[in-house]
Amino acid sequence: METVLIIAQILVLLCLSTLSIYLITILGRMRSSLEQFETSWRQLSEKAAPVLENLEAITRKVKEISANIDGQVEMVRESIRSAKDIVDSVVVLEKRIQQEIEGPVMEGFSWAAAVYRGIKVFFEKLRE
Image 1 (cartoon, one colour):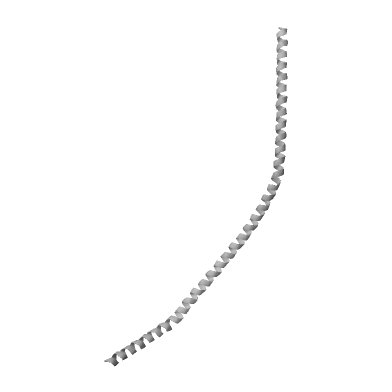
Image 2 (cartoon, rainbow, N blue to C red):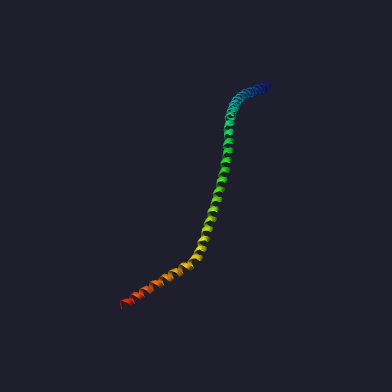
């Protein structure tokens, strides 16, 4: 029975030794994977810094352009308001001129029509 226990202990020790060797191999692979990850991370960090700086510059320029566009839009709005005011003034002036001139002009046309009718009647009577 002691022999069986000794053989079982030897088998357990062999299994533990094999497991230890396997774990050492796995840990070595994990270490190399982690080193590759670290290298990749460094490269990414080195390459990301200029990209982030460019992104910051682009963001700054977009803000400037947006501010310029806002200014231009405000200028266009102001121009449209001014044009509307001018058109409104012209319409008011047109109405005022029409009110002031329409009466005398219509009176003049009526007078000219009356003169024309009078001359026409005169010549008709003259021919008879």
